[in-house]
Image (cartoon, rainbow over all chains, first blue to last red; front, side, top):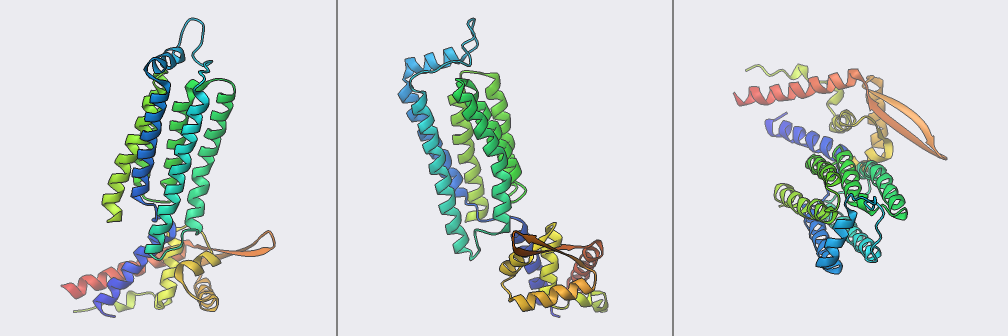
Length: 214
Length: 100
């Protein structure tokens, strides 16, 4: 056995161990785009609410004498939910399309054991958090949407970190911390939301892109 | 220069066996079809080498049913993991000794 042969062998082992246990077709670009969508969505929400409205929105979401913290229902709420849903759908679609493209370029399959595990472990906190948010919204507790969505999204990223690039774990931890801080400052949900889903995604996506995609 | 070829595990002489083992060491368990897809080999080839590793007691076979479809899972035994690590060490030694 020659030296180069042995090195080939070791390289193939390393790549197999990585490919068999990590989903490496996630694209950094999709993180950046998801962040951009979230920022656009937040901007639209802000404009829609208007300055006065935004102020009203934040004020009534705050703790107050008549306990209106959780029981606000400005007419714009349905629009806000629609914007959030649009951002979510656009982000997921972008993620899927870019991952499929990257996998094809590298000649890997996208639907394999690892990607299934990844999806399952992400889905558990996401579905739980999503249902919780729907329940809260239905009962008029709009104030919890931003912190709860950040926290559960962060949990799902930490879970995903075991099956893909470990950088995603750090992003998840940041989202969880941000969600907890958002819970401490009721009324500023939109700002935290824009920061967590917008800025953090763009930072994470850029790092991943520079590290793995080029 | 003495090269420790004798430390290389004969069971891993075949490249596919070494590849199978590396997948099973990196993952708790792996099923037949996923292995086949990942390694890009034929049923027969994969099955015969899995048999070989099973005979060495390097892997465990779990057969079960997913609905009506048979589902065969493999996992590495402690003995197999040790053999794999030793084999990698030996390969490393080979590279080191040929460099010096």
